[in-house]
Length: 257
Image (cartoon, rainbow, N blue to C red; front, side, top):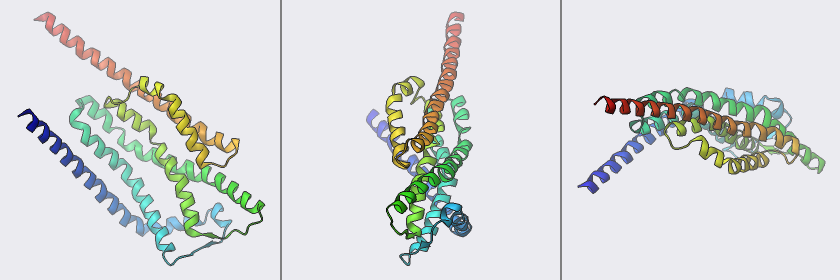
């Protein structure tokens, strides 16, 4: 009987997870369609930047133009989907949370959009120009003629900007996982050396191979991690205090009886 109950619970959880994934996919597809209508002004803005004006961008395939519009639409859809993804994640784990944890965790959802946009801005306005300048300087020093395709330019941009935008979600992810008691500051401190290594590795990979560029990207990423540890400790202390209050109420109740 207990095995049947466990199987039913597992089936219900999988059904619930599938439903929420379907909702996310539906929103993403809707955002993709909407993104196609605004892809042109976004494209004009991106190709009108000082970085893009340095090159004569070419199309090497009949599908290059459509492909770029699709990539822009997909990025737009991801931007508007990120808060909804976090909301669906919260809704999925909600039954296992206390009421105060449910209320506290759902407050994080709007900030996912803010941090994602901050990550996009950091990647596009700081990391991308710096990296592009370095790579073109090396190319010119080798006496090579620069002939770039529009797909090359945008792929290079998105491969830098998107990972940074996702990394900027780290503080909220850590707070959320702390709130649902998967992470705590003690675990994060034990993981610090591995986290630092991973973040430094990411910074070195996506930036030019010079100390200044690595430093300018590594420091914000490390600060993000330390800020995440601080937020986790803040949430964890509040959890311990709430648990102590609950325990004290039970102790007083037992003494009264």
